[in-house]
Image 1 (tube, one colour):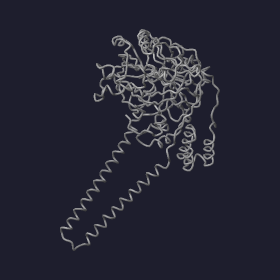
Image 2 (cartoon, helix red, strand yellow; image 1 turned 90 degrees about the vertical axis):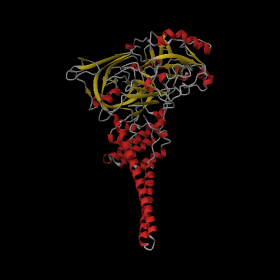
Image 3 (cartoon, rainbow, N blue to C red; image 1 turned 120 degrees about the horizontal axis):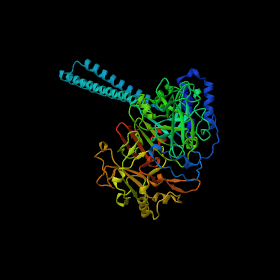
Image 4 (cartoon, helix red, strand yellow; image 1 turned 180 degrees about the vertical axis):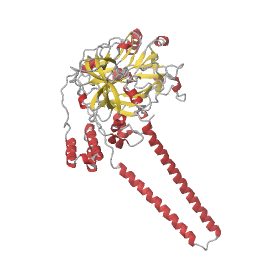
Length: 627
């Protein structure tokens, strides 16, 4: 295995990430269970992985899906209007990504350094013993000299003991830190780009987990995906096949005659000889699904192209307090999950790239809350960090990260600033003002504060106090009340020279970047305000736009986030809509470029600007403390 690993390390710059993950899993399995795999079988298998990029891959042709038919996931219970759907279709092209394996020689170098330090200590001890013998033999020296030597020896011993005590203290502190890590775990995993949404892998069942891909949705509660037997449920569009329940030894349908329904109501279905828990969800744009409640073992994240079979593998790779960083750690966060096994779906759920949906509201039914209730994570919080790529591939286009159990400060380019969560189950904020900043800019803090020109669109704070604004990762675009359209459009025209609408625009890159940046001023979570932060120089604080409320949160949505480019037409379309009766949604394009921390533990929502580069992070480019 070590020779093969060295060969892998030599080739790591020329092979794809998906190959590496397969090889890494195979090598780890060989080390943990050498008797189960022969040397010849392993060598042959690894040679195949090193030389072939298509071996064991399922090739399925799938139709090009209208991009904007899959973007709007607004719930009927919110009372929101149906979304405007453009007619153009988007093409899909493939994109590959790479990662590096860690060097197997690092540990050997550390061991050699430790051996060298031990030899130095031994030499010092021998010198001290030699000095003691010489002092004993030298009986002709005066008592003063003997006393001086004794004092020196005692001082040396005291210094040595002090150093040893200090080293022991440091070792104990390190052990305590190592012990603390697994007791307060948080899981870091990759997000992938769908047709306007972000999804994560979940691996379901035993003994061989099956992959399902689910949209991460902070606007719903239930996790659900199609099971085998689901008729005309879009398998030809999705990343994966239906979940084959008969292949999982741990799958179990919830029998409501003997237990209570968690996700739906007790009913009789033709395919079952007993009553089952049936659940159904409908969406504003017309799609829906029906499912029976079931339970099975599953975990989120992990290597994209291979399941983790052995818990020992995850434990061996995780190595201590930073458990959860590596994709190989995902198995540690396994849980027995209640979910919806879909038997019927309609509308957008058939044509979306992901197979299902992951409910992330603050509800006992949600994915993260079930993890918390089963003791898999210790804190009631998670973070979503969205980036965006030009196209989405069925093979998986990395587009950010999800941290379950906390937030990872290594992503943050600005301080995490908290808004008050004004909702109980969903995640809501209170808007206090909306601004348009001339000449754009990606950050909430302008490039040049003295040159900044910001226009308040003129909607009163008292009016906005009556709006219900939710932060919904399952909604691609941002929606605001229709009553502010004329005010927004007038300010837009004052800056750009033309009225605002949602028609496609032909823009050069320079023209795109010069469009106004939308700034949302949000009520802060007061207990979290750090008075030491300067509100005029801290990105994300409102000091430059509102001197009376300088510690309110300021969220920037630049044109690069709200303008969506169509590969087919070569044009940009604004994806901020003034269409709602009241209230609205800050969707994924508002969240983009931020690590958004949904902290139910403290009833707040944190915002920190970020490039959300998951692959760069796990490759080891940053290694600072996490919170």
